Image 1 (cartoon, helix red, strand yellow):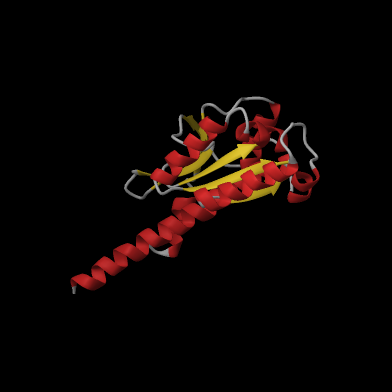
Image 2 (cartoon, rainbow, N blue to C red):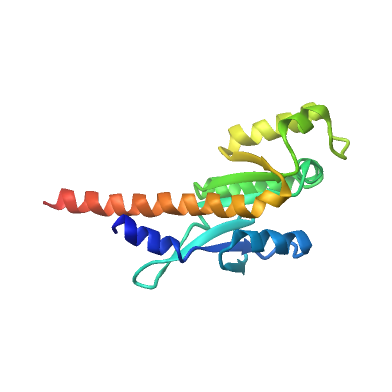
Length: 182
């Protein structure tokens, strides 16, 4: 595949949205801000992934390779680390078992709010920071903070770049196979 062909394939990018993501006003705005087609389906882990259509009309999906788990604020992530810790842990363990890259995107949050306890939960700020950083180390996930008005664009951009990297690696792998056959 030539870079132009990869670019054409990327024009077919569809964002996959887990069916468990709750459709509300913010959800609909986030999807609209992505500016690409959306397909709702049950994902094995994470809330968002991506798929493209290859020149032979087959689908190439990242759903078992790259996903984004989105939380609306620190209040919600505190619930995940407290009352829902088992379920949240299992989700990241499934991603780890698949050797998938996970992004944990938390809207309306930053480290300063986490350290200063600017959220509604009985979880202490030191316990929250410890859980966040433990997830980074334990599951090799990427932690991203943003405002909710940015999340749709950011989700699309992350998935676009991850897809571009995978397509480029796929092409490099094919070229290496050709080179070793000679």
